Amino acid sequence: MKEFLFIFFLTIVACITAEDDDWQPKTISDIKSIRNECLKEHPLSDEQITQMKNFDFPDEEAVRQYLLCTALKMDVFCKHQGYHPDRIAKQFKMDMNEEEVFEIAQKCQDTNPDNSPVDVWAFRGHKCMMTSAIGDKVKAFIKKRQEENAAKNA
Image 1 (cartoon, rainbow, N blue to C red):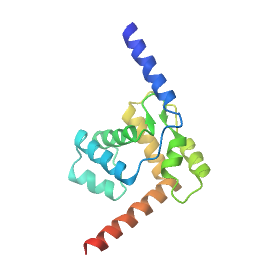
Image 2 (image 1 turned 45 degrees about the horizontal axis):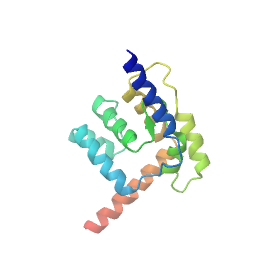
Image 3 (image 1 turned 180 degrees about the horizontal axis):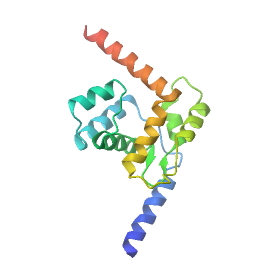
Image 4 (image 1 turned 180 degrees about the vertical axis):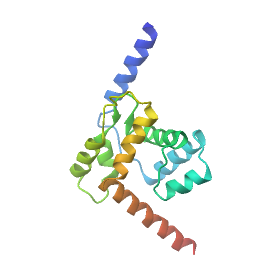
């Protein structure tokens, strides 16, 4: 029991100290690599991948686990504190004001009062952010990149 409490305490400390200034937004290359790693760890069906490419994120365990994996590896989510609004603001500000993104991320953050499983908690925050101005900007950015890639391959 003491060992468990010690490990739990260290995990909390790690999440709290993760707030330090060393964190940097991930590059497109970093994100692609993280997504590939998480896809290997949490395989998705072709249908789920197609849905996600169309910005439809089904509330299914495989999708939730994949999204949790990416948020954890991007270090924008902690299993004990949830999303880090400051990191969300830095990572996803795009052409928005960082303070505006921070405020949206704060509104989407919760303390998991129902003690939902971590993947459900992370999915809830992801869903909130994807239905906000942050999600609109992310969708527009991804669609533009898809169009550019299609034009290059044509």
